[in-house]
Image (cartoon, rainbow, N blue to C red; front, top):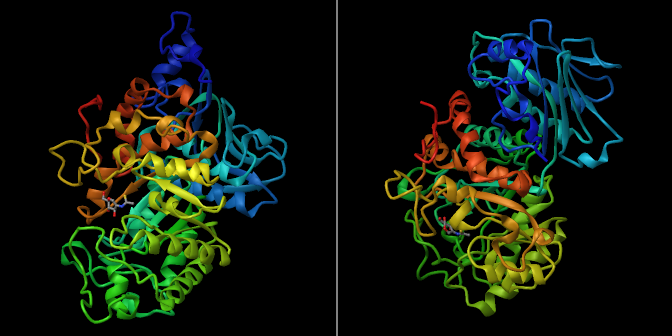
Length: 526
Ligand code: TNX
């Protein structure tokens, strides 16, 4: 648990030496590790009232035998060098390095850290980051970034010293799945935009990015066996813009970029509803091919389109799309949507979902679907994504399928903050920061508890969002709070503490170039 004994900043018992250190640390970085505004909050922080300073002599040491750890060391160097100007190098070594350096290592023995846990030990002589798996080292680096002054996040050289308060952090996630979803169908977002979003979610230790790749308004991924999906179906978006799509090469580049940050990409092709872009590209996928032959759609209504579930060609289409996607997806999951198929009769919807589930499995993947897919017969390997109705999540749990918790009224980043928000919708709720933070996945739905829950996800739908500035304004600062709900144990989380940390974290988000919503609920210290 969080070590509360070290949280008082100016205890009378502090020695003169400790006081000197306090004032030498620079105004924006507290001298005590447990005073750092870390988000998500670690499982345990033990402070030791001293400092370690990065200098021109500091390098990053990694074990001789691991290319992967070397890559993680390079990621750390690339993060710290532009702002600090210290030119840290990654150096392979057989033993712990001399004083003054940082050291990353894997520990076979410490299995309690799991796949993503880490231990970050900062002493006056150096920084030692250990983990059981490489992903843990990567997550630990995100903590190390936040233990440095906020200016470390800037992309050009800053003056100032680079001190880190000493102590030990031992940390691991509560939930295995901590995701964000980006809707690139309603408005298209470029490869560069997606990479920026990946970097932002990585900073808060999220490990999945779910890409909503198709909807009524556009098809966004090249499928070589059905070329009109992109030659026709990608050229529209909400409001009549030009749309766009990712070639398979670009998509693989996104997957690799995410993998290097220990983030899995989950591709979603929404079906049988939300399919106007496919239906207008291939009329044979409609039950009635001629009348009406759907035109590209640029509005924001939902629930009017459906693949023709009684035609064999529909399953040939699904099989081809799933096969091509599975080939480009190293992660275990493919998302088939399944939401809001209002014009698909239930007697057609259920066998359709069952058959798609088999197709997904035949290509070696596990199916994820929104709430409504629980009307079908879920395999225990399938996952239901809860967004609106408790009974669907309960049905998933009863069927032995896991649940991803993303309640629209708490976790939807496209919901407006309040009635004055420039962007966003409010059909589920207005979501201020306290509301986005103050909830607990394991008690959200009666009967759906930690054992049923794979994790949480923060989706952002883009009907009203067509550029990165707007996207970041809606995601921040709610996303860090949602990331904390997924990572930090319930026992260390509370709104008052989070609110204080977030206020101090504002500067860091600014240094990261994030144009966040400056909620009045938080004192940003301005
Ligand atoms: C509902 S949530 C949808 C999306 C919309 C979103 C807008 C869900 C599974 N479906 O199609 O974009 O509301 O907030």
